[in-house]
Structures are given as structure tokens and as C-alpha cells.
Length: 242
Image (cartoon, rainbow, N blue to C red; front, side, top):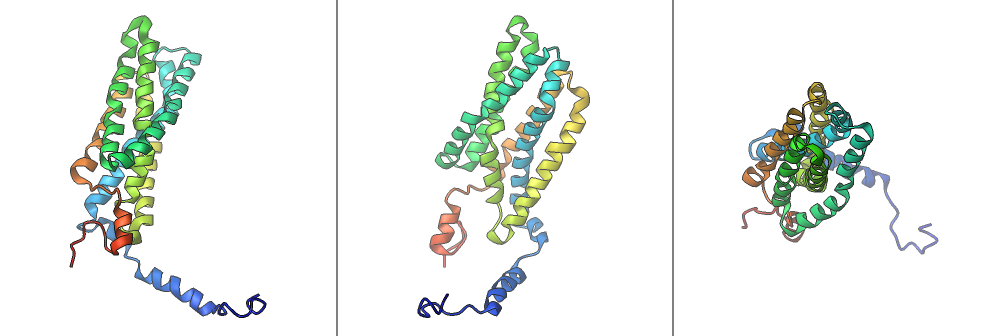
């Protein structure tokens, strides 16, 4: 094909094609670099964010309908309330996606995680409100769905942005693995015996969410525009100039 095109393109040398990836692979830092001084803090902050949102998601996805039934709700009502909770994530993710560019990743994560506290409190006390229980729970479900259950666009992107390019794939993999293990296996297993108690069930989620909300703001770094700075200057954002 190159000859038919008039030889305008140089013939490809297979040896050249294989040398580049080998050099790139050899230059990768070790996995242990994720835990070295200077990087460890950002690794922990990113993982905590991912764990908090993932624990909330999987507890509600796996246990909420059964928990509501155990707490006295009819099966049809428990299914409807659970559906409402997750339907609220549709506008919630649009809102979170806008905020993470408008006010930054850290403030968006703070809003998404701490913003769920009022909703979780309403769901925890709804059983005490008599005939208004369904309404109170629905309001709490809407708040929770639009906050912590919609936080994945921010927490996942922020997790990836905690690592330099050479570590980003492995760092994100580490964070996702820990979050899925704790959120999808450990947390539901530990909480399953207590689904009949609204205070324990929703209170546990509230504690986990609150733990993950503050570290990005207190110990993390803002990452909006970081890649653009690297592209323009060839140096990481915040690096000292010559």
C-alpha cells in the first residue's frame, strides 16, 4: 500500500514498534511508590473518598429493600422507596458533574458526602413519624440519592488524579479494589444482622460518609486544571519553576 501511494510514507520497522513499549515499561516506578513519602497521603485520601461513596452505594443496593421490610414496610412500599432513592441519582449526577468543574473536586466531594447527612437522618427517624413516615423517608431518599449516591463522577475522577501519570493506572486500580472489597463485601456482611434497626442501619452509613467527606478538603489537593498545566509547561501543577 505504501508503494501504491508513491512511497510518501516510510516503511514501518517492526523492531522500532517494539522498542518503545519496552522502554516505557522499564521506566515505570515500582508499585511501592504508591506508599512512599510524598505520595502516601494522596493515596490514602483518594482511597477514603472511594470507600465512603462505594460503601453507601452497595449497602443500599444490596440491603435497603430487605431492611425496609424488616423495619415494618410493605414489600411494595420498600421497593418503591428504594427505586426513588436511585432515581434521584439521575439529576444528582448531572449536578455533581457540573459542580466538580465549577467549584473544584474537593468542595464537590464535601457537598456530596456531607450533603447526605440530612437525608440519612430523615431516613433513620422516619419510622418515628407515624403516618408521615413514607413522606419523611421519601424526602430523605431524594436528598441522599442526589448527594452521596451521585458522588461517583467526583470521587472516581479525584481518585485517579491523586497519582502521577506513571502510577495512575495502578493507583486507580488499588483504590477501586479496596473500595469494592470494603463496600461490596465487608460492609454489607457486617451490617446485614442489623437491618431491622433504622438507627444502626442508616447511622452506620452516615458515619462512613462523614469520615470520607473531610480528608480531601483537609489533606488533599485540588486537581482541576492539573493536566492542562502539565500539557502547557511539561511540569506537574504546583512544581517549582526554574
